[in-house]
Length: 185
Image (cartoon, rainbow, N blue to C red; front, side, top):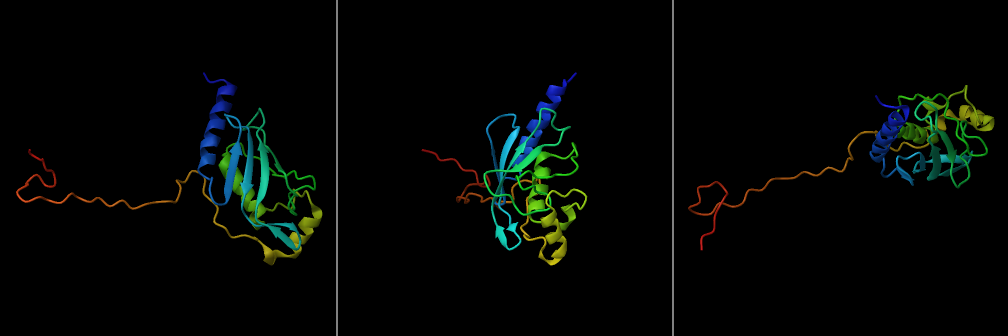
């Protein structure tokens, strides 16, 4: 029978594998341990740092607790000024609202990227960390979302596909083997 630690390790491994599917142009991440419990994620999406200034690259840190996935992760801005957002406190901590332990980490990270883009579907008026940003958000609905970048879908294979065309070797005169030939000496 699996122990709680076995279950946690399996989930951390699955989260790590799923995270690999979203690494690319808009989301990049690194970690220093395995199974990974501490991720530094770079989001290359436009977001506001003030009502009249945007930034196109942001770093966040995601810490998974010893009770992951049953306890929500801690998420905070990492090494830079926090964005001006209804769900970001002035110290850089990010209010993630309700946590669903069934959601994979990569899906959660893509949701964070959408949150940074000010996706109106993700702004929760009942979970406000920055009231000035919330007032500004609700007063300016035509500004949002502020970035339309197509974010990756967790679990999808990378979209770099190549068409491989099979080329048959030329037929040699007198060779009835259909492309196979032998050289006699």
